[in-house]
Amino acid sequence: MIVVEDLARRYGDLEAVRDITFRVGPGEVFGFLGPNGAGKTTTISMLCTLLAPTRGTAAVNGFDVTRNPMDVRRSIGVVFQDPTLDEQLTAEQNLRFHAYAYGMARGPLAGRIDELLALVELRDRRHDRVRTLSGGMRRRLELVRGLLHRPRVLFLDEPTLGLDPQTRRLIWDYVMALRRREEVTIFLTTHYMDEAELSDRIAIIDHGSIVCLDTPDALKDAVGGDVVTVKTPDDAAATEELHTRYGITPEAKDGALTFRVHRGDEWLPGFVRDFPMRLVAVSVRRPTLDDVFLARTGHEIREEESDDHATMGRWRRMRRRRR
Image (cartoon, rainbow, N blue to C red; front, top):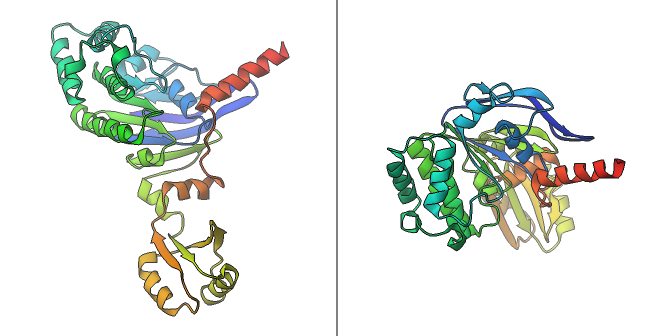
């Protein structure tokens, strides 16, 4: 459904996206995981025909984003990072305006609106003005609007940004229910690890480049073992003992020692039994996507200003200084 080859986008001297290549299959949930400013929104904007690539090619539903932009737009639904509903209109009026813009037939429209609003539990709010709806309700309404014209691909750009954790979980319940019902391919950008876990495959992007791409489990397996954390009365002595006995050099962090071993749940009982020093606490866990990101990029996922809007802002400031 999506084919991207050596796609790049430059803003003056700033290269926001650097020669990325990937494919997304029909019905797949494809996660684009990265920190703010990594190039996620720039990529999704090119795929949705809102930005022209500097170089490279991209096709959505078989249509080239540069040569056939109208065919691409008819094939996609989009939930943008920033709200785009008309707050003065009712929920249903927003949907009917969207249907008009897409040239949808009036006959089946009422039934289509009714079934989608019912699915996201907004049917009883259809006549309420958008300004009276909560943030979570507005996001649900935007999901319905994005799917109203039966697109083949649904783009979700940071769909739960600014929502509380409980509302975020509810939004994803609705997203996955809509995916199953509509049989739609989903392209998701996020910097939330728990959201990325819902993807069939994940591409991790950092500083405009894709650093790895695979299923969540495969990415975690490639990190190099389960994470073991131990607390002891003497970290220096424990570090030396771990190195001497097991060839392990742990990392000291937050008052504990952390290291990786393969099949940690099988390794741990023997370690607890044989380790000569007193252990205050021991734990083992599977690697997380945070661990994957740190291992592949060398830093933790960053919380910066606002994705590629920050990049474009810096570019505009640079242009103003040159004038």
